[in-house]
Image (cartoon, rainbow, N blue to C red; front, side, top):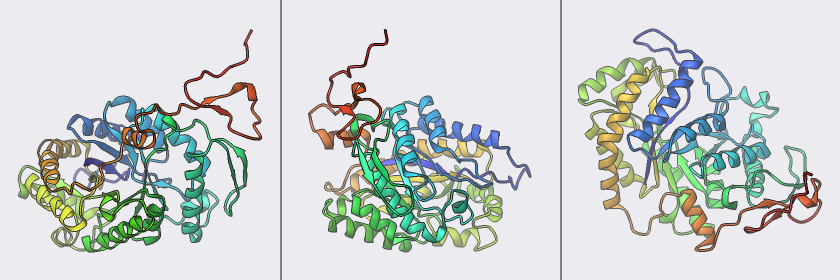
Length: 394
């Protein structure tokens, strides 16, 4: 089971201090949060992708590569990579590079994005969001698995004899999650390819997320990737943690009441009762999180949203101390004790390499320089450990 935190990268006015951080301050803060996540024993840090104010994370691979360089164990990932407005070729190359730089400590979560103005900024139409998501991932999937790709689709120019570089680390593509708030078609896509499905599980009742997850599990089994129990599921979650429950309620209330997403709606008490949001002590967060396993079955990744709504860095770091020091150790023990022995393990680069190669050495693609740059047939790579025969520079 993997535990971590994610951020949507919002830049929001602090309703208590009345100040709004600069972009530079928020970017600096998010790096500190990621490093702190590893320090307190968490496994994963995730950041969203946005191209519109008030968000700053327009280049997740750049940010995550920097965080990977500052950490040793932490898996860096996206809370959404826009499969619709990004070109699949660029995604293939940028995330393969991140995979190399992080030594495999990465994966990514694909999503459609729901901000209508962003689509035309990248030459797309939000009304084509679902067909874009399906076609673009089909191409991305192939680019990571085939040295040479011939491809033609509806939304971009054809490819002839194209090779995405660099090839994935150990010739093993990164693990892909498909994230959705409400779209069964995305769960279907995840199941078709045998990828993971991540339910945002923040703003909606558990019954809503359960319908999507149950559908994904059934389709995962239908496509022959394993039993429903072996499907790979991730969950979001939202918490504000303080040593004492009454302090958590008092401290979080102004942030809840003025949050752009759920402020001016149901009260905080109504929201915590009807959704996964927990505002309370470490034990209260533990108790509510354990109900997720009872509701959804065994799952592989739990991410918490702690950093949002204008909360200052100090408040986020204090919560991370409690999450890593008091909440996650208990959850690891309790969830392990309750786990079905047949459930899937959390995917890692090492487990993916082992599944592909067993005890054999991983393929290490090496460019065959003697073939020239314009390869029209066959692979431009040598296999195995043989060194490429580069032409003399003398």
